[in-house]
Length: 374
Image 1 (tube, rainbow, N blue to C red):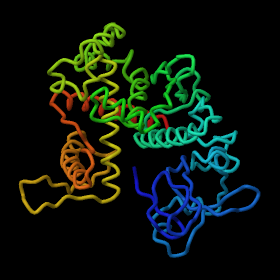
Image 2: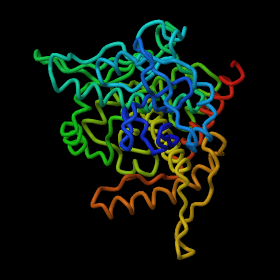
Image 3: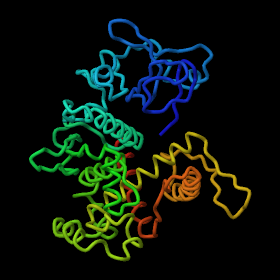
């Protein structure tokens, strides 16, 4: 994720912010340009970018020149529901309705008659927007069901019902269902502990489930399926049987030498989805570190060094891995100094790195194809 600044006062702001903490300017995210801007009201429910002469952020950001005279309106979920910070170009043919591009990917929202569900919806939408921003930055094909009824992506945010019907988080031909209980921090932590997982986050769920979606789009029924089977195994193996065996017997004792997580050992589909999620985890974190200019210059020469600032979308896989290990070392060290668990509780065995390399090739090829079509 890139860094963002307030157009009005140049304060660093986060992707999720709705207001600048320094000058209180209204902030909004423009999906088409991938930029955060400060906005001021222009009348009739419209907004324009709020610029300040001499602000370094304005001089460095060419998008501001184009946006200076442009008018925008807030996404309905921003103006009314307070679960979004998306802005829509006024009169944009891309958004004939009142929802921003990110919110158009959500088909079903939680039942808002339950007050706690609004908080969960906000958390779900926040994680989903970050996922979509990463997918867009990687150049992956991304369309809603309205755009592409056959291959489009859509999300449903559902909850367990009082009659015992459980909602299972999962993917089905482009429809990703999320149980909103995963947005409850206490529930998610209890589940993580009960399943002996070192890492369980809402964003991680989104990354995992969208991995299933892209397996269908980019691997299944393509020339990549045989190389996939060589690395991950045969996805035609009975999934229900494999899942039952996993929960009955647990993972193989040597799973850590072959898989990125214990759950990845369930079935080749889950191995792919876990590895895909981990790849997104790596590139998004590295992208953020690069955007912040993070470098490691330890006093001892035998400690990890990080100087490379190659943009993630231009880096080779080997370059990404060479930078990832020093970054995770300092990430875990910082977390421990704060009394927090390791931010990166993983160890990547050589077979896992080979699988990550395969994911990198699939993503790079898909991005090249999308660029050629543009």
